[in-house]
Image (cartoon, each protein chain N blue to C red):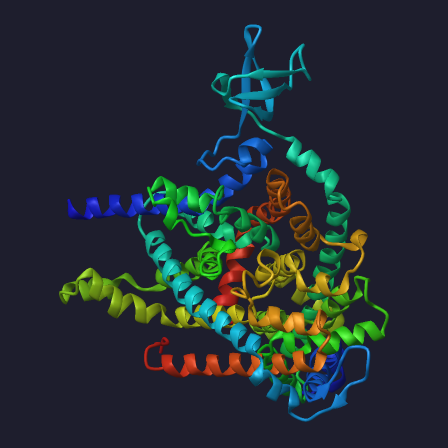
Length: 291
Length: 322
């Protein structure tokens, strides 16, 4: 077939324009800004790696990195575990599976801001549903978590909130589970494998590509967490929920340190890249793709 | 026997978890219908109730006004004695189920809901149109037209998907400011007309499965590429386009950072940004806040039920192939 260069270019021209104008050129500009002192009202002024050096000395920067890692390391594995648990429950031969699947999925449809408003209320120490529930279980009043009002409990509160969205992963895991041929389980059972062994050696390996995918997407999304903290806590109390991207946003749009914030964006990119590659590397031994 | 009891345990666990995941919704709706007085109570009660007092042989709704020593001053809210204040013993008050719709009507007044809904819908419709159009054109160019350089373009596009939005956020903000686009919807809408790497990728994978013979036949009949795209490819890719439309709609409806950066005036606010502001101002009026969060959630839940198959399709496309 003969090459039809100009037709191809014409069809892709909006995309090419978009990639150039909204990605490639801004990326170059961002890298340049990260090497500049750029207080919004003055033009950028080259300062070399000073912004990166300042970052290394900024306590809030390290604090925000720590917070973000705690969130990612808490919410991603827990979310996957809950999602997998739900998927296993859904993968039974019982009536009404579609209804249950819908119920678990619905929380992921709730708009982020509406969800944040709801959870501020759910996590209210006195009148919130979560603590009412704990009271029903006779948890003593002195043990009641203060959630968003308490610096030790604010991050666990946000992680708990993220678990309400575990149904998104569950739908994916369920689809993968249903693709597993039942002969494999029967064969394993005939070989004398118990339920735990079947789960570890048949179920997990067969759905491992989907697990890896949701893990990586969760990781990338977790590092970019912003709106939730902005609406619910503004990073407080005592910076305990100061996420990396919230700190970045504040540096750029409340302190107007555009160069500094650009450097933070590049460090974020590096963190995401390294974390993703690390997870991929670590998983190659465990993830099995179909031949 | 063992199998049967296993199945019962499994089903009970399923029901328990479903109840746990549904509870926040029930609680949200119930709080949105509670009186201010009941919202402030700490006991767990899903049924909205109002306090009543037995007056002249019938129970009338009342509102507690203040404590006076051991007694309670109340205001009668209905019946012939509406508006009068009485001092009564607290244990003479009872509760009965009652839906406090004023959280919704009051919320609509405090919060220019319909204006924000219109602002949000204008952005959503333009984003859906722009994304579907630009992405399907680009996908046709990448999948159905052979040309030198299309592989390079495809790989550049995939590489940009790795980049977190924070990297381009500041230069784009400065650019849009330079163009005088701040406080307009242009920064939120124009990029949608210039393709979206993820959706282009998805549609390209889909277009590659369309038999080339169909397009060749149209070409022999003298159809141009634009005509083939419109009359052969688009009708065959309705399901995939629906995925693009639904998910770009949700993205625009939920977008928080974009409107936060680019919309300054109250009368331009979208629902997401408006509700976040309301949260800051009326943080004590929880019945009203819950009512407004219900109102913001309902359209998406409705969309989900209308397009459930498209959702499942999209999740699988995003999850398995992406």
